[in-house]
Structures are given as structure tokens and as C-alpha cells.
Image (cartoon, rainbow, N blue to C red; front, side, top):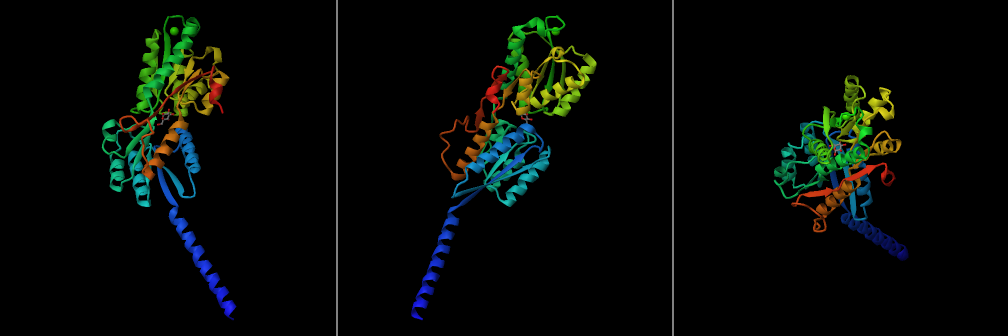
Length: 342
Ligand code: BGC
Ligand code: CA
């Protein structure tokens, strides 16, 4: 009887101890809730960057850190995006990662974040500096848009200069070009357009603009616009500069459908270095692109989010003006495209 009672007591003590232990462990495990809000659901570049982010957050999980990343989007409407952020705050969020719909209208989101003391990492769609300066817990992860325009212009200039008479198909001493622009007001659309053209001119190439068309970063829209240009100007276009790869691929598609053979097509350049564009370079339908380093931008967002959450020092980061974490663009053409295909 006595023995049984002692054994029972021992078991009881063990149960209490182990459950006590478990409790201590679960208290040690913290959960970082990251709210990611995208401007839209169907942007190829943004979605590629977001899946890398997801993978990197998963890799950073450990016994004492659980990370929950939730992804929502603003359906291309700033007010809808504000509402999404509002809901995220209510549901509980430690770090906000924001890809603005309208980069000039972040006030509502900034106010919500401040009220809830939730640090914000903006990415890809750059708020103006005055807005970023409104609170010290806000950062921007992105690239120098002007640099991508410069590299694109240089890529085209180098090619054209190699054999001017070949690319000046009508022999008038000028290069007739079409510009396919991203979204009006986007820093990448404005600066890529400017710097690409200015760089070509600075390289001594005489240009004649045939058409500037907004195609909102979209392959389908660019194909449509290019189809109209082809039916109006035939195959007289000598150069197509697109603010991103999707639009460059749309232009290529228009030439395919118009049944214009490769040797009668213009030189075509994009920006981003997404998989489809890299294979188009391999095929020879796209002459070049500018690599938009989604891996590094995702890494910067993930590292920054975790360090902000833990309250770690940010002294190892190269943060400019206390706000900007920038990546370098890289030139891609047939000579080095294999380095980018993994
Ligand atoms: C990319 C585009 C993308 C846009 C979205 C740009 O940096 O080059 O492909 O559509 O960002 O904001
Ligand atoms: Ca010409």
C-alpha cells in the first residue's frame, strides 16, 4: 500500500515537473508577426520577390523564434490598401512591410503604424523623403532607379555602336525608338525613361522618338500598344526601350504575332532579369535586361524586420540618411546571361 502511494506520488511530481518545463519553453518562444502588403496581386516582379522573402523568413525560424508572415494586397487602390493595413493592425502585427499603391499617399499607413508603434519597411515603390522622415521607425528597401535607366541606355548604345548601319535600318543616321513606360508617377517609370534616353544621347547616338506609351508594367498592355505601333509604322521601329521585362516581352509577342522575322525586328531592352526575360535573351528575341536584385532586396527586408523586432543594433547595415537600404542593378546580355540563370 505504502509503496504504491509513493510510486503514485512520484508519478504525480514528474507530471507536474514536465508540464512546468513545457510551459517555460513555450514562454521562451516568441512569435514575430510580419504583415506584408503588396500594391496588387499580379505583378510578376513583386511576386517573385515576395516568395523569396517568405522562404528567407522560414529559414530564420528557430526554437525561440516563430515567424508568421501574412501577405495581403491593395488591389491597386490606395484606400483599399489602407484598409488592409488597418485590419492587419487589429489582428496583431509586429513589423509592417509595405509596397504602396500610390507612393505619394502613405500618410494613412504611417499614422496607423505610429499609433500602434509598428515599424514599417517600405519597398519597391518609394515614398518621398519628407514622408519617410516623419518617423524614425520607417525604412525603404529598393534600388537607385536612375542607375537602371543608365545601364539600359548603355547596353543599347554599346550594341548600336558596334554596327550602326545595321541597326539604323532606314539609313537616316538616327535611331527611331519606342518607349514603353511603366505606371505614371512610379519612380522607376520616370527615372528609367529619362536616364535611358539621356545615356544613349550622351553616348553620341542620335535618336528619334516614334512613340511613348504607358503600359503599366504589363505584358498584355504592352503587346496591345506595340501592335498598334506596328500597324501604324510597320517594321520601321529600330529600338524598343521598356521600363521592365514584362513590357519588353509584350513587345516581342506583338512582333511574333505580326509575323515579323527576327532580322527585321528592332533591338529590344527590358529591366528586371526575371526568368522569361533571361530565356528570351538566350533565344535572341531580347537583346538585354538590367538585373533588379530581388534576392538582395528580400534579404534586406528580412534581416531588417528581424533586427527591428529584436531591437538589435543596425550599425552593420549600410543605411543611407537613416532610411535607405539600396541594392545595385546589374547589366545582363548574351555575354553573361548564363550567370543569372540558375
Ligand atoms: C519592376 C517592375 C514592377 C514594379 C512594381 C519595378 O521595380 O521593375 O517590374 O512591375 O517595380 O512596382
Ligand atoms: Ca534610322
